[in-house]
Length: 139
Image (cartoon, rainbow, N blue to C red; front, side, top):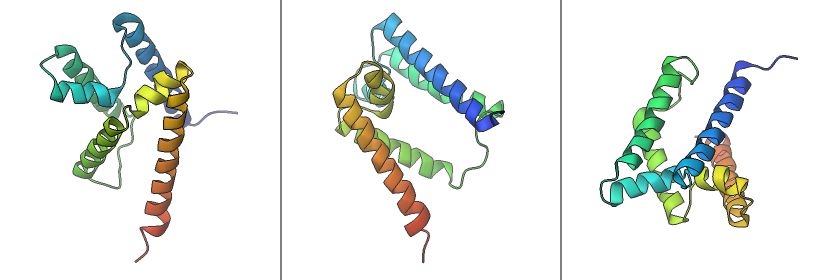
């Protein structure tokens, strides 16, 4: 039985995210919570490491796309994606955490708070996809 490319990319990407989060914690003693790092980069004084972290995320996505390891076709424009990302980040900050901080680092630490947060944001994501695909498309 062979795995398809999407599954291999997801497995490889997940392993890289886990390794990066673990390495960040081991070397810097910090949780790799993307929303928190980005929010602090914007709201706090100049700390180069925060901006470099964010830049690394953007560059990794661009490199993956150029290498053919990321989807090339999306059903939406870049402005909607940016707006959606900012709204998710705002909601994450409002809830005192983010998907990466809770989903990767918090679950790895067996945090009950992170488990609840992950269950809530995954349920919200599933409901949102259902609404957009099955209810929102009707006219």
